[in-house]
Image 1 (cartoon, rainbow, N blue to C red):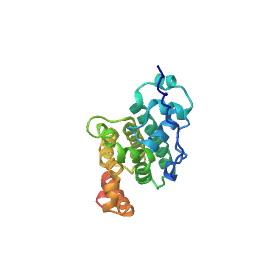
Image 2: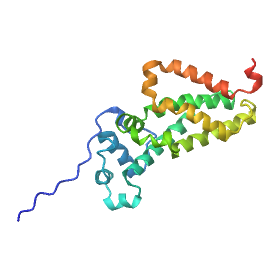
Image 3: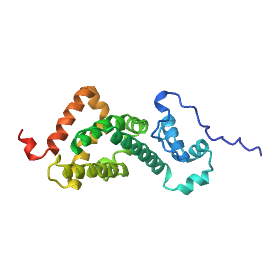
Image 4: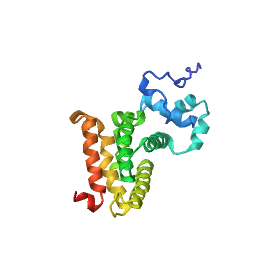
Length: 217
């Protein structure tokens, strides 16, 4: 009996728009780079381990050995992208003291994180994948952001620019006050231009972190 023709794995496609182009924050890991491009081109629902393996130029067994399935690989790729953007934001930050550098870091990081290609793809096409990190548990990126803020809060306490506080508690409050400006950035942008949002966020952060003597000024 004649066998039906074997269906070919989907070949990697060229990236169609500039927003899909790789940036300096991309991971050198070829597998995570392949996951990133697969999601940007086809979305999470249509991305498969087989097509990721083909794009990365590795065997399916190599992908399976990585473990965790497609969703785990996507979260790893997001973590790598966020890590690079956070490093860039901290490097670009300026200010006369640690509090001002924290404010500057946040104001650099929020638009970069909200416009990151993987964030945009997940927010627009697969927002349900983000829901557990809003209502159930913190993910690796949220823990990384908290750790960065805790370090900067301790620096601020050391130079006197941040009020007495527990960095672990303050980082939790700041994370939940700020992360909506990444997840819901398109809603915010329809209501308020970024320069006004930036100004309001700067007031929010400075007022929350300022020592008592500055609050009375």
